[in-house]
Length: 381
Image (tube, rainbow, N blue to C red; front, top):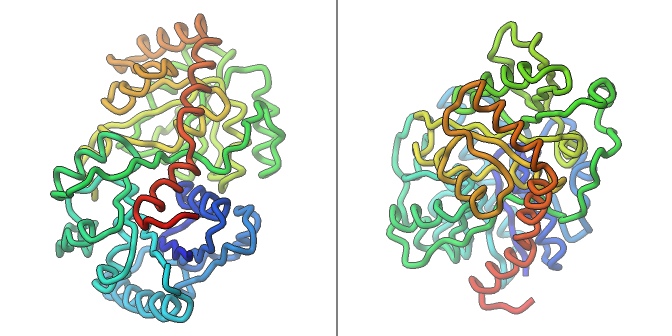
């Protein structure tokens, strides 16, 4: 069996793509990872895979902000390069694993004629040719003709089935890191001197960690102010490639590290005391429900090291915390209530930690991938 893993995006900013490549490799499958060019990247530094995994760049440059005409030119070039490569390397049991709804438009209508799996990373009611403007709807046949449709969260699977009129419930493949190695707390920092120096500086303080983008959809100011209120025994650390949207807040026990590519960002995660989750529904390229039923890979990254979590009150987070007891949803997002939640977690920290580890062990990522492929192709491997 061969699988062409197609992802038109920056794969180093997409941990689910990295996990999937490793899992397919461990299942003994020949994998062709088809992605745009990443400037000066050494794939072997980020992918610990065998010679079964091959990387193919479908463009000679990474796609950044360009005008619509240039993007259309890029799209057509990528489509031609991908299908030429596919035709040269396919065999009788070849599957295209189409990762993210945005990749669909690059592959075009020919995709429907092939054997493929549609793996959605975000919850979207419609597929669009130009997502940012919701122009030109793509046919739902892309979903209906797929061997399998995959969502990363249980509620999203049911919503997608209802929206798209699917006969079967999409599979749920959580955004869990893979390989599923044991998480060693307080790991040595090898990613950068800046990161090592900061973690050394914060030694002895309880690090309240947020990792991910900082935006209006993911507000952090209440959490930062609450940590400042709790005193110098704590520190709020943001691991993000975003600009700080809170001017002057640096004085509030707030520290920042720029983006660190997977898997090295987990070295920072290993030093966290509590992990922060913050999501507010706003209108964007995806459904407004995308945030309510969030499925952040950071929940698994925190849990890998037994780190409890604190977040605002959303259905997906509350469902997880109620099922596993690995965190607290703050209903009234105020400095006082966030402080209370952190203090409650302090009092019961060992139990929260054990529950977080239990959450992490609740999913066997590689076996889930194997089940999806086996059920979809009826092949035994």
